[in-house]
Length: 444
Image 1 (cartoon, rainbow, N blue to C red):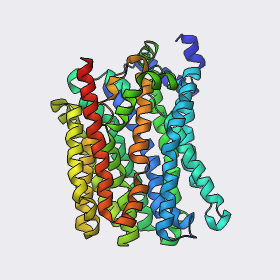
Image 2: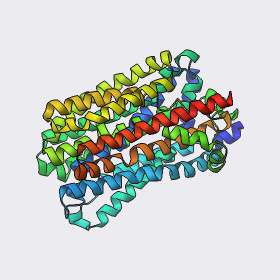
Image 3: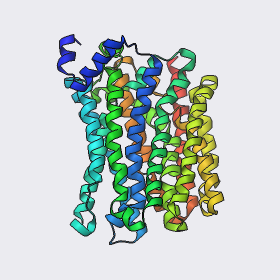
């Protein structure tokens, strides 16, 4: 890519970031990349968790007051899944923008779309004001979130892995995953604060809207942090050498489809676990235990801290025993947890606390390495696009429908059925890891 083309396809923010780098003689150190990655992923997860929490605490009353609370929450979780369906479409659209207009343009549009659609939900009228149009608008904004998240793929995790020392690849692979517990921690904290300080009427009227406003501000900060890395000469060098160049989605699927499929199924245990311990239990506690949500959200915040340190530990462990081995072990542990974990939600605060703490511990160990075990199998020409597609499909298959499926199963067949659902994800992970290992042996 020539200097003229780079300049012509840059946003003003990206050009400002490039000037900052030039002034500071900036070099892309792994630590600098890690900060951009963590900020970016935290902002994305915060946007999604704000919506997920509102799907339990707000939307059933605001958008679906004409049905009972359980049905309203099921409807909300159905809309929740729309973003995961839209995400691969967003990747297809924004990869074309990346190729034709540049990564700075793509990221700017995607993150403003993500923050803007999230903030737009804050102005959403309820069913009492506009009837069923409220649900239509909410679904539209949710689709926009999914499209934007597909476009928010910046290649920084790939850049981080390319800059990682050979014996610390597991450590650097877990860094992008730290955004998940951080995003959930902040989202839970905001909702718990407003629910505690406001009356129920004020919270449902206007208090729940503030976390959606915060999302836009966080996205702006994350955008500049990411563009500051994308604008560096080292990133441009990797882009020009095709290490981080977007390839056509169709071409990537046709030539590396097997790697994409295995990469999507390999982390399924941790991705299914992701919403089974973060989103579903809040709905169960509110609907069936009829507990005050603030107390359970406080437990989840402690779980986020446990998950954060478990992700950190996954990096150390993976560098000792290998990422693939750690994924397999964590899938086996999740299988065991599936047999007794969900039933703990019916055992009061003590059972709920054990469920959350053990669940986040197992989630962190598996989720911390979920992005690196298979993605390394992509050729350099298609690593950037292949990793994005793999991530989209993994979230769609593993996590997109998890809250909806878990609530439907639990409400009809009991919590044991949620364990069976979780077990299916663990089995898929073990199968994908086994197949990929066998294919690697044949290749050798």
